[in-house]
Amino acid sequence: MIVIEEQNGVLILRKASLSDICEAVYAVTMTIPPGRVSTYSSIARVLGVSPRIVAYCLSKNKELIKIPCHRVVYSNRGLGGFSNGGPLLKKRLLELEGVRVKDNRVEKEFIVDVGGMILE
Image (cartoon, rainbow, N blue to C red; front, side, top):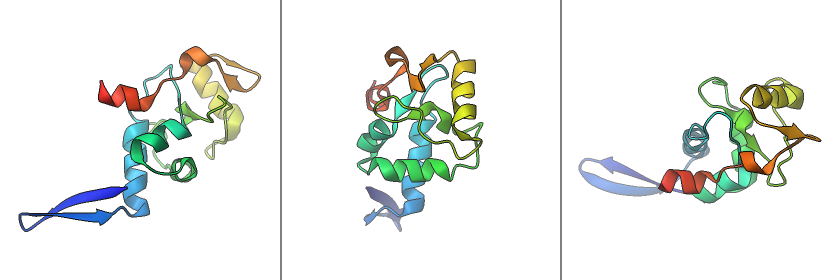
């Protein structure tokens, strides 16, 4: 991922730091509406990073209300981890938002592609 910054009226390109990447992950995650989920891979494609980096950033999320990391699941629709209370809490939060979870997998109709949402 590349970051563009302005310094003294000149645009500078630089490689993104982990902090920059996590900020971008959080920004994309905040676009997922209540009652919908997206995947680590979908967010990774938008940003041009690995899904593992997305998962790492979300595991460090300290603003659970503002940054809804519970709305991000595996590509196979499995719940994945949730460092802020475990997968049972993640499942419960999703269900409270109206997402149906069966056998610890989110049903297909609740999955959104964040790349498509951002470009609309």
